[in-house]
Image (cartoon, rainbow, N blue to C red; front, top):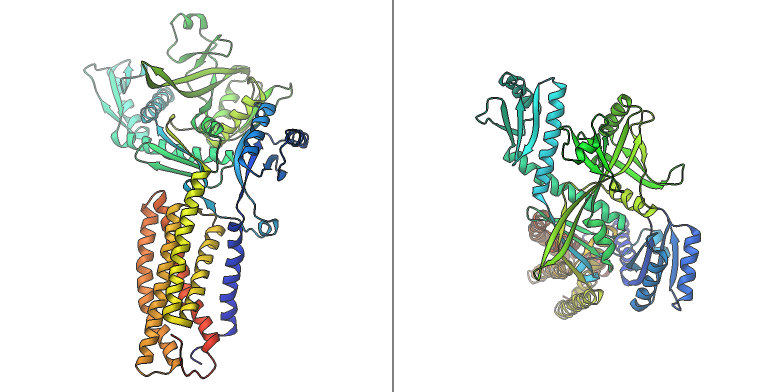
Length: 613
């Protein structure tokens, strides 16, 4: 029979519609203003009970109080109650925990149990914070030059090449040899292991000046941005933000958007802080007092500990923060705050080799932090950069260790928690500055949602009325398919946990028009077949069959454009492209397969004299 689907095909189509309907339901339930309390160390049941009691005694009634995975989530009926409780808990918890404002979904448990969650809303719909960060490219290049300097010094020693000094000066790494005869082994070493350095020879015969090549400089800058984006993404994950937007803007800037975050203090603290550790041997061969007076040995560097006491350390770094793969805070055997650190293979090998050769000698831990403060100078805001380096611990190497060990010398458990969080998220490849900060209120986001929904409803109703009035029964069938097309798009966005933005709503509205366009082509083809004298059953079959090629061609063309937008677009353009791609695919399914199934139910398997089209 021409207009008949087998039972399995009908069941498959109905299953798709049913599953889409279920997975789109969570988007109807909205969100509650909530307060989230978390800590690097999981909160205890005792702390949760105290927090719950504080909320009850404040006179505020919470809609729900949830304690799960060491975190607390308290839901409230309005933002006034939310803000009041947040202030109370901040005073109570102090630095022991992070109290953050958030918006929690109200999806029923039975939907959550099957993995049905509402799709994420972007910054323009949900509200939140927007940061524009600038990567300090000059600092990234300087750090690379310092690494080259230290690596070159070490390589010369290993190769037993005689030299007087290796120093970084004015963008050059200046190597001074004992004699001009030592240049040949140096050139061989540079050609083998330091291809990123360009050689320039000054007038002095016993010197070689090295400079990073333009290609190497570009790679360093490119890596700095990429590494910082990865680190920022890890740090944002520590904050528990759903679907953050972290993307590059230009050559040296990064956009960070945190939907749903209403309290920016903690976000700025975690995003803007550059903290890492360095492990160095203590220089016990030279007098530290002479170093304080200005006579610092060539291979050493003067530091100060937390008590302002001088400490002379070897310039060679054993391991750095970028070789740390995991870090957690806790207490050591003596009850002191400690950070337990795990190294990667390279770092573990270095640490094992060094501790084996230096048992009984002191090793220091250097804490490095870059801060940016905004000060008012002559009525203008000036951003002041400050690099803080201090020795937090000096301990004697008692035995050989490599992959896992602990670091003490921290002032408080909170400092240990913050340091472990930053180390776990990864070290920034270069310092970053917050050059722009914007807060989008949830009221503005709700206004955008209302306008987007209104535009969708108006457009949808007009299309429904036009199709039903012009194509009668067939038009109403197309309207049902149109509604399910929207349901499928929403369901797929929810299942993918994609982020819906205002341009995304525009993409959904556009797919409504495209879906109707496919049905218009089919229905006009059926009418043409009827005018040519074909029977109603043949007209239906030939209408769908002959219109398919045209529909496929138009949808594939639009799909290619949408894929290009997604591949090369950024931000809002990607949001538009995602919904457009999903909408194109779902409209092909509903406009061709879905409407055909319903028409087969109505007109198939029986004699038809007239079609209401």
